[in-house]
Amino acid sequence: MSKHGKRHRAAAEKVDPDAKYELKEALELATCVKSEKFDESVDVAVKLSVDPRKADQNIRGSVVLPRGTGKQFRVLVFAKGEKEKEARDAGAEAVGGDDLVEKIQGGWMEFDRVVATPDMMGQVGKLGKVLGPRGLMPNPKTGTVTFDVKQAIESIQAGKVDYRVDKAGIVHASLGRASFSVEALEENFRSLMGALVKAKPASSKG
Image 1 (tube, rainbow, N blue to C red):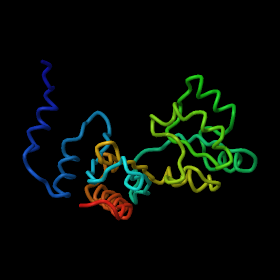
Image 2 (cartoon, one colour):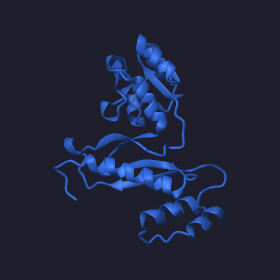
Image 3 (cartoon, one colour):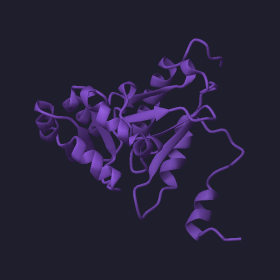
């Protein structure tokens, strides 16, 4: 059985696995046990008590975190004509159509987020088996299928996070980085929770 390193043991000693921490206490712990070698992500898992097998309880959406995510994303955009230029001017990493479809089918995955105009979804649909499992497929519910590509790119870089309930009825999302202040992480958490509360379907309980 492998042993944990000294740093891991030191961090684990600060956390009581049987305790129920208040939000601020939990965030303070998250920032004080951070690594010195890199800026770790601070994530949250929220149990929604929904049945994702039911269409109206398959919660999915996005929210712009007020303090951002602490990360810059490489945004790929499927667009043509004026929208292609709009995407490039907004800072898209790559813009195109069939050429990008073929490139991705060939194994290229040098991007973090994908945006598409509605008229390009026919081509993008060919990538469902590639982008879908990675959570990268554009979707109107997350604002990534839109003709306002400039706004979509700016929202992503400003701190927009997408969330989707998993098979167990849990949403996993990032709140920012371990270098953030407790106040910044708390503000981001409350924005995420506000979005989840608004997304609560009338048919769910709890």
